[in-house]
Structure formats: C-alpha cells, structure tokens
Length: 306
Image 1 (cartoon, rainbow, N blue to C red):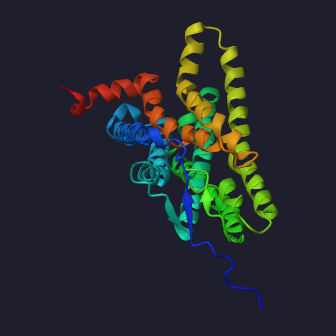
Image 2: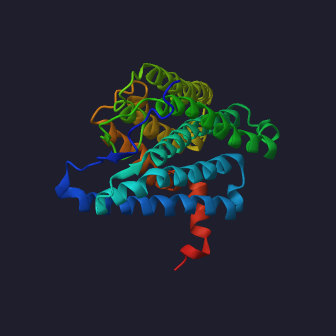
Image 3: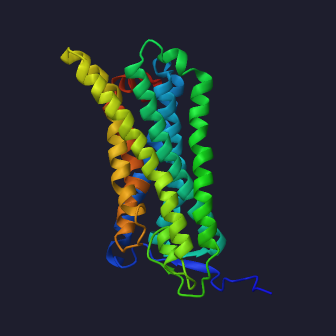
C-alpha cells in the first residue's frame, strides 16, 4: 500500500526580500502606499463607471470588471508581503500556500483573458461601428465577463494539483514573497518533471494564447486605422484603445518573461512586483489620465468637489 501522506513539510518560509534587511521598513512603506492607492484607485474606477451615465457602455463595463480583478489580485499577495516586511511573519502553512498559489494563478490568468476580451471589444467597435451596439448587448457583455473566470480557474487547477502532489521533505524556504509554481516546485524532493510540464502547458493557454489573440485584434485595428484618411479620425480611433494597449504592454512584459520558462530564478520575485503591485497601482491613472470620458466623469463626482 502506497504511503498516504507523502508530504513531511507542514509549512513554508517565504524569504521575500529578507536579504535587504536595511530596507525592510522602506519597502513596507512604499508597498503599503502603493497598495492603498491601488485599492482606492481601482475602487474609484468602479464607482465612476457605475455612477457616470456617460460611461454606461461595454468598454467601461469591462474596465470596471478589470478594476475589480485588480483589487482581488493585489489582495491575494500584498497583505502577506507587508506582514513579512514589517513583522518578519514569513511562515505560511502548506494548505494556505497552495490556496494562495491557486487563487493567485487563477486571477492572473483571468486578467490575461480579460485583456483579450477588452481588445476584442475595441476591435468590434472600430471595425463594425454600426453593428457594435447590437452585437455587444448586455447578455454578451455578461458572458464575455464571466468566460475569463471559468477558463482561468480551470487552467490554474491542473498545475496546482500536480505541484501539490509532489513530495516535500525539506528544505522549505521559498525564495519569493508569494507561493508561486516555479519556486515551490524547486523545493520538491520528488521529480517535478510532470509538474513543470503541466506548468509550461498551462502557461501557453494562460498567457500566450490571450496574448496572440490581443496581437491579432490590434493588428486588425491598426490596419483599419491606417485606412482612415483624416488625421483627426485616426487619432479618435486610436485614442479609444490607447489606455488598454498601455496596460497590456505593462502586464505582459513581465508575465511572459516569468512564466513561459518557469525556472524560478532569483530575479523572478522582482519581476513579480511589476504585475502584482506596480501595474494595479498604475492602471487607474492610465485609465483616468488617458481617457477623456473617464476624466469628465471623475470631475462630475460630488465627492471630489471642494
């Protein structure tokens, strides 16, 4: 009879940025401020979309869904990181580690697919402006918003299960500020080949597939914009998707580098800061400062009048 409990490690130690002892307080203050601004900024975007009648359209509906995703995404990892920095609370139980790993992975994949959905929405708006409102109705918007969650939580399940099934007999120190697939797999005493393979396959569906879709949609958009004769028309068409394109570039630059070849390098945790806290921190500013409609709705809110 096979051994039922293959795991001897009951908890992990998240090393985070412990090798920068002198800067723990400074890092805590910076990350705390970015976390607060990220929550407040993305909450403001959701409030603007719900209260601003001029923003009651599919594009801003998807932006509000994405803002809600960002709030959930940063809340999965950043509070634990702050506890690590300020209180040296580096321990995380085996179950909590894999719960964090699964939810973090699933929400990250959801963002990838939501960005693809938003690109699809902009492609339809620019290439089929007359039919757009009839194609993207309330029912379609709801389905397109739910679809990324369903697909993502299924994709994230397989590498998480294969990784949790590995034998962990020590050491238990994770060179990261969160439980992520590659750093955890590196601690396994058993052969992580299947787990690594599952992670690589999942990465293709999680990041490359939506990224290729986004490239396809924007190629179609650029071709259409190039055919517009007036400079004003080109600018108006491009301005409707410029903020989204900026967010895509910020998010995917670090995600693809980290996850397509999950080697669990020492520098992965620094890159991870980009999409776990920096991008959610910047996104509300990008959508506010680069979008005329959002700026106008922002100015109309009574809570911001002095």
